[in-house]
Image (cartoon, rainbow, N blue to C red; front, side):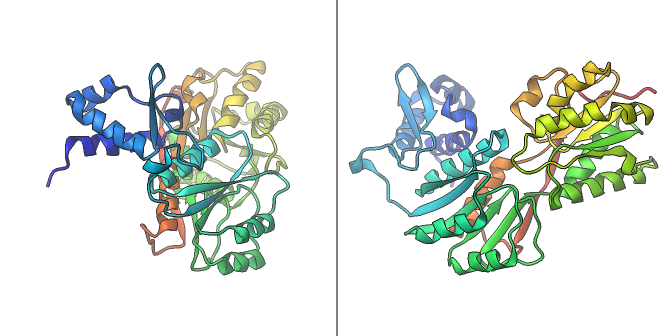
Length: 369
């Protein structure tokens, strides 16, 4: 049986609220009507139900916006939907668009499932032991979603996670584990698809002399990604050795954009001597930051050297030239984390890798050398 129009509109709007920009702006009533080709009545019903459920708010002058990231649903007590429990979300206090997008989606998607969100903010001094101690104190908590960034979980801590007795999903994990307890899952971008696509972005445009700038900390994910990049370049019959890798000792919480600028500036000599026409950066913010360092050394992007990074940040579209990137669907990653935690998805594997995709823009051009 076909769904009613207002139901389709409601489901579509719920997906829109998962986007970070929904806190500032959602589609207008006129845009929704054009999108679905409907009268005002089904749009109004969808909006009324979403507002009653605390997912959006409609205000004269400000239009439709998502209700934000409060763990309390902003509706009157008499209209408050049934509370299905709480989810603990541990996330880093670090200025990263990727982290903000993940946290926003985790909170909005939890809210759509009638789950309250308990936020636990992590700084550079927070350990896995601190998180475990906090999680043990929570009552009526259905599970834990951890976005902790750096730091491998040691076997003792992993056993303590197993003893928590709740589902635990580690989101955007940079470390891989041979075995995980039955209640622990890890979600990561797939380093194999990422590495192949990063290399392809340059190889397919005729670049044969390619370098790699590791402007992020060393971890399992970055190590495997670099291994695949090197393999892909060599399989194409091109040279790639340690000389083509520019790295330094950078720690989690250090500024990766500063690291990228310094690595490029310190290695301009080798970049020129090797005749590199393409650079792959561990992260897109690093590629964005390095544009200035390259220009200061008379290397123009993309006329003289092409750049590609990982992660589709907002700035990637607006820098000049706009940045070619490889990215993972982080909104989907966050939704899957909540689905696993609630039992709506029961994957056979404990470690789950999400495929990456290539977004081609103008920072990579045909190499005519």
